[in-house]
Amino acid sequence: MATLNTQLPLNTGAKIPAVGFGTWQDADAQEGAVLEALKAGYTHIDTARMQVPHLVPPFVIPPDRTNVFLATALNPPHRPSDVEVAVDASLKDLDTDYIDLYLMHWPSAFKPGGALIPKGDDGKIQTDNENVDFVDTWKALEKTFKSGKCRAIGVSNFSKAELERLLKETEVVPAAHQIECHPWLQQNAFTEWHKEKGIHVQQYSPFGNQNEIYSAGQNIGKLIEDPTLIEIGKKYGKNGAQVALAWGIQSGHSVLPKSKTPSRIKDNLDGDFELGKEDLEKIASIDKKLRFNDPSKNFGWDFFTDLEGKK
Image (cartoon, rainbow, N blue to C red; front, side):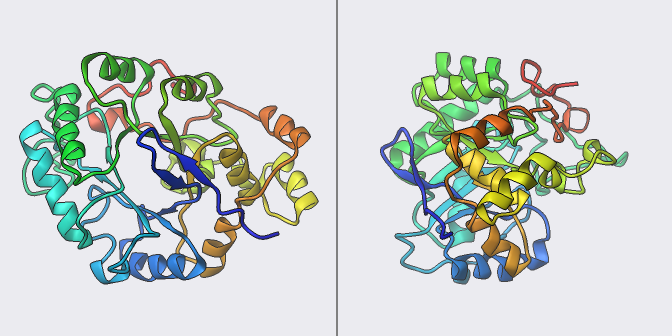
């Protein structure tokens, strides 16, 4: 069953490829992994300077990238005066004149300086939350959208209340919101609210606790091995991971799986296929409201306070 190559609309009028290639972690492997992804047929590459600078070397992305949707994110040291500087740094890193989607990575802020993730002698992240309001940061991002450097701007890891405040106090409605979302954390009411507001949902960690960095997901089995997903997959000749991706896409979301293994990179792209109504109903029944990513203690900010899965 071939991939559907689904394209989903943004509120800017642009289309975003439903399957993006995530580049979080494994910095040394990213050059080869992105090349494999492009060779496999991916047209959406998701990066972030917070994760690794120069994550996607310029020569990896073709100079004429008309068919490559490139997304990246603002590093949390985001005083308004630093925003355009950060955008220009990403443009230079990626050797491009524009970014298709630029996200505010977190509503919280890190201490400004040379380090991407500044830490004190105690190993804790140094924050700047008392000096930075994400609304002011967003207003600075709006300028990069209006100038054309960023063709769409969005957010990541916001609560509903934080998003409501952003919509109330600023001009440009976010084109996208990148959140943890998967069959064990479906957040239906929250994602429906996004549709009402014209905000596209992107799913990071679409395989839930497959990522070993999530300590909360240990000793409970893997999402992609959930019996319901496995059984549905047999019907289509797909695996559990591909079924999880298909569920996200049919929910109207773009999904951002990551891998450095060529076979899995290709398999993930083939997760864009159509599930039957009865299969979607079965997946709806396995929502455990399990959130695996919550760095509140490390970031000095209480994230996701009004969302499902918050502990």
